[in-house]
Length: 219
Image (cartoon, rainbow, N blue to C red; front, side, top):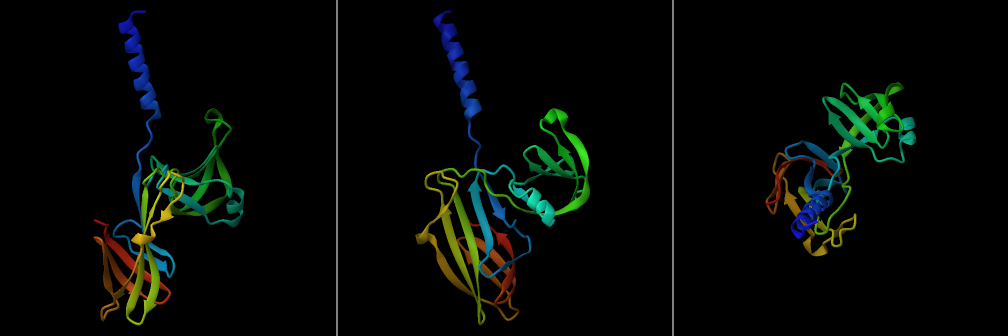
């Protein structure tokens, strides 16, 4: 084999190797989505912005107690294919063919070659929740807005920043970037929270919970 041919083979092999080992790029997920009316209780997150690697944006929480126990050990990702809602659990897929919040069938089998669509004995109700990232890369970040309650006519809100320093599948808080701020409600019991370009419209606030819309993301 000539040197030129050897060099060509080596270059092609390297290109194939690089292409096969290219890591997925992080994506940014917003919880809740912008402009969606949401409610959070005291101590709960009002808003999260996460930059990490996600397999799916949503996962499934089963509402039937028996089904919860049966599928408890598994991570339940949610996907939508050609108008059909699917919960993915390794070799089992629960199917909601009407996308109305109830799984009525399952695709079951050891391999993809022997998958069969089987009707469940009874429908399994479920709801969608935000999925967790499958991988957190170094320097990935997370912003969290925490509702801390209402005192007289003022809201207490904590803004926190987290970062992954070593690429481990976890975030650590950046204490120097945590700020606790009070916002005053107007005569209608409403307010607009502003922080580093973030804008949250407060529709109603009590000592127990807050109803709001995130109308603009961080700058």
